[in-house]
Amino acid sequence: TPLYFLLRVCIACREDHAAAAVCFGLAIQANPCKASYYLHRAHCYGKLNLWERSVEDYLIALDLVPGNPLAHFNCALALEHLFEYDLALDSMNAALDCAPGHDIAEEKIIEIRLSRAFLFRKLQRNQDALQEYGTILTLDPSNVKVVCGTPPGCRILSLTRGDMGEKE
Image (cartoon, rainbow, N blue to C red; front, side):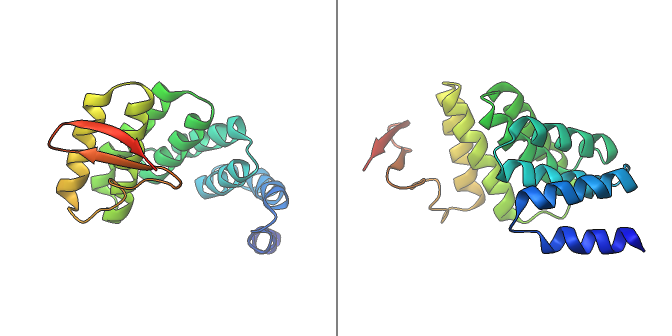
């Protein structure tokens, strides 16, 4: 069918995010009730730093298939780029709320919780961030992401003093 070939082109355009976004747009025109098309296009928009469009497509996908934890999480990441921290936190909370009913790897749950802890810090909710880091360590005591964030600076969590600091 023509839609099948169109989707093959979308997949072939993976590295060309603008072309893939256009392609998924055509797929959406052919079948506007397919949430996965919106999710893929939202991802393409994110790669192009088109955060508003990315959020719009994630929200449409969530309307079509409510309770998708990864869609909630990715929407939260896009909202964070728009400095909509409270909305991003709501979306991360929704991701964690609906995660138990889905087959999601524990590493992804930890990634969501880690992102939520960083959001808490951006919102200056340090006590909530500490609690989240504690939950992450309880889920996986060997998780080094809690101790060392993205280079060049490492985020050190001192559980004995209960504070966070930056260290090069």
